[in-house]
Length: 625
Image (tube, rainbow, N blue to C red; front, side, top):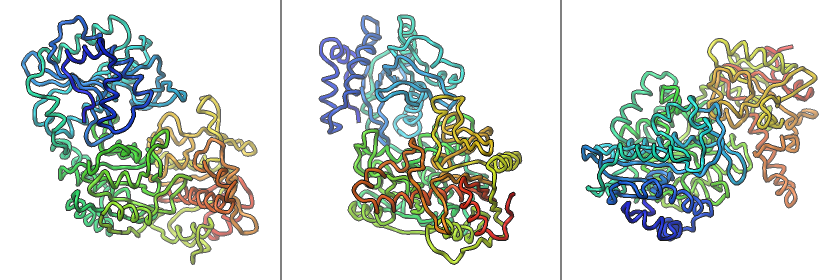
């Protein structure tokens, strides 16, 4: 969908003879069927005339095509500005310009990420060059008219208010700057942008290029599909075993037969370590090999970041990133735009979407956006107040959408040394449910209780030296002080001389893979859905045991933790319901943290009675002094 489309001559007329923001706002209301936000209108008012001045009084062909707010069909991504024409050899060319009103930014140590200021304060976002390149990559990888029609796609970014300060052009971002050059404030920079445009567009529109791109068939290119298949080949961790293979084949069969009239919803239930993500990634690769438009979807960014890295097999992200999406990206997606959406960690789906919670229901949005939706779910891993992912709710939404529902399950345990007994013991021990496993009898899983977090940390650091597969995690009971003061320490237990920083800065979603992250403590948000060989868990004061009974204290969580935001409000009207819900979230959090280890889980509790309780319940286990 293109909101505004004109010749270059018409665009310049609308920029300088009329109020172009009003023209585009009217078109936006007609096509998007909603009012544009104030920030959208402000961007059109400020950035489009700045772009117009690049062409004004210059020798550019007036019959070039111009498009503003091009919504890429299978995504919620909107390209700010497109220019179409032909180069010196009369080959069709498409120019992508990412427009920004920024005046300042800060470098980060995260790949393709910077910090800039928004209305609500500083925030991390994509580098403009990365953003422009990613849009070009999306078109070249999925728009059949582009990749088979020989259309050149040339991305760049223009920040008309941003002076030269060396931040955005820092060598750290060199790869993306080469893929999509950036142009800043000043006449010299404008001259460079004009030169860049002339390199690619010498003549005007000849072949209805905008129309062809907008109406182009959307499906993965063969090159992308082949590359993706090759990236998965030979990776032992993605080999399907036993029932994983059966679930994969059934889900793949249902996905390939689905259509807009016969929508399919597949629900795959499985506990931690049963291979939900393994099956999900195999499905993503197979669906793309069949040239079906599909994406891997999670609410939590960490699994997406890790699997992007694994599949790309390079240090930097590639067009593989376009196959991964947040669960909040489908609020404005047209019906059945995707063939298949593979939703991992579906228990983490939220009801509302967007910074202003304007969405209606993420389950509904996903089902509506795809002919087939495949949900991988473990209801016992709902760990925040907003999590609505339940099998019954997915089934209800599927019936409303007229979709057929198939339920599958994964039961065999491949994490925790394959010990279903450990999981049953953990459920009983944490007070989640009574099982026949009050004592730990697993022979192959290494569970230990430590009396010192510092001794625990040293053990994890030592184990990590072998394969970089050991990590420390904790309940979110300590403030994130290092967010604003990089020298500050977050998780501090002074009586043991223990102090570490939270992980939520440098490595982002790749914390669990980064070589230096054993020096930091992870939380539920950066390890859920992922695994290591050994996990060291600090249980904070939000979970204690008194006289053999588990007691949870939501008020002991950090005031910065968003997981139980809503608890106090509900408590004022329904204390029993609020207490019950918070109790489940806290217990599920520690269950999730304590099941990240393939070979072992080492635990320290800030509460002495809780340590003795775990020690007693794990009789016969190797217990650290």
